[in-house]
Length: 288
Ligand code: GUN
Image (cartoon, rainbow, N blue to C red; front, top):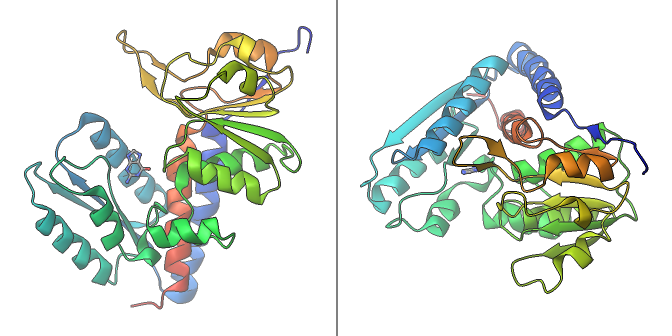
């Protein structure tokens, strides 16, 4: 790539564009069918990062004209009590989508919680029904962060078909669903993880490289193929308080054709897709 520097993908702007589109569609839905999309967020305990995410989701709802409800439960809430709250939200006709902010306290089984959510209201796309629909190539609600990555690639008109894509990280929230989304779009996908023998040898083959390992600075410039599209999903807070991704940004800029920054890349897309999933859920359910 010589001295060319990468195009920095503006996730903040794309997220705003998506939210502007959602606001317009929400206004139309209300005018034409009397439906106000409703999103509820359940937070158990007082994890500081979760509190920030939940506040962000509430503000985003207000901005696009959704109804938002918030349930804050103490950290000693029983699993049974949480299941009761979920049952109430499954039945709540004002609520079209909801999520339980993860992680939940250790005495609560995450799987039991996710499986209790009505899949039609599972706007996080975590329920086995939604995972299965994605797996079989007929997605319903898609997991927000990987769907946000696909949106960024599409809005920057980055071709996916036939490309060598390498994902570092195999989480249920990002790595695995993104694998399926890229596969559906005809990429050749390789997934790396902690037991991958020669990580750099694999990442250097990537035309689209996605770092979703949660390991600050693990992807150095020499691990990136010239001209690659680099998507950094890492959000790591250093001891200094600085927020960094999994990619060494300054070095990667000299090798990549496109790159997402941290913050301001993938992160802002997650909430935009959450709102879009909620709007979709509200649009199919009957009003009132
Ligand atoms: N915790 C961190 N990210 C997420 C998310 O996307 N959804 C939920 N429910 N919890 C999270």
